[in-house]
Length: 383
Ligand code: FES
Image: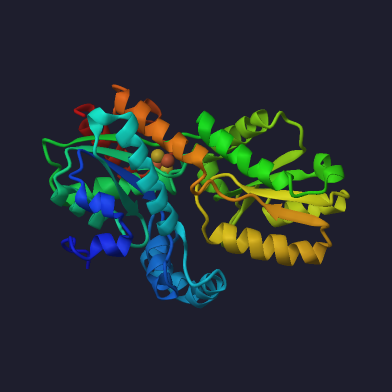
């Protein structure tokens, strides 16, 4: 299904810039993310890949149950994408971020220039396998794997890294390529400033007399308690981002960390964003800002879940006086400075992979995780 990458059609489909088409890259910056369907007709395949990914979720009889759930959920999810304009903007934003990132890197790191961004999505085009075919065809010898999730979870970043491991079980890793890993950056000072700036922009839109009473709800995608108890680093890393942002803002507003997007009947990490809103309204709070804290660009969970389901529908139902949502980092100049600085420091660093990345969850029983970490440890040692 995913054979040789077409040099002529892929860049246009993925929206690569003319700059990246003409430059012979010396350094590839591979931006890893889950991706989102660009059109409603991609929704089924997207869900199918998610539901059959055992890094993302573990279902009983997953090969049968996963495709069944994907088929069943497709119409409902298609409707949501139709309501936000027909598709996910993740690819658009990642391309903008990648282009600006590489332009900046070319200036601040001439010895590793030209840089070219590649996008490796987990569940939609440009899929990880196709992107690595392209990198090989481009002949790039220095490859930086850059997770676009600031906080590491085995279900998201871990799944992307395991997919790269799987790719190189079927394809030989080139001896002359140096590869390294940026796996997490939850408290990078410029990321924190960018999020703080997004919040300050929203605070200014509240009446001056009410600003001190605005409750900031940092909302992150939840995960099953089973994963939390296994030792997934995500909850603690999300918390570290929240505290760094509040420090940046001087701890002058009331705030809480809440969790969204639970699916299925099993227990997940809470409190959930909608329940928290209900609870705080009962406590007499009337002004809220929802802040997406774990994703660097707009996606269905910001544009539909936060904007439509919570800010609009739930806000009206609960009679909330004023509820707004802070924008994701997207192309905020401080955010572009943040990702450029992260890659720059990484390129200067002698460590191609961090020790935390190589440490599995305390209760991980996945053979795939074990083999993947071993492989990265070997491959990246020689970088
Ligand atoms: Fe976390 Fe395997 S589930 S390392």
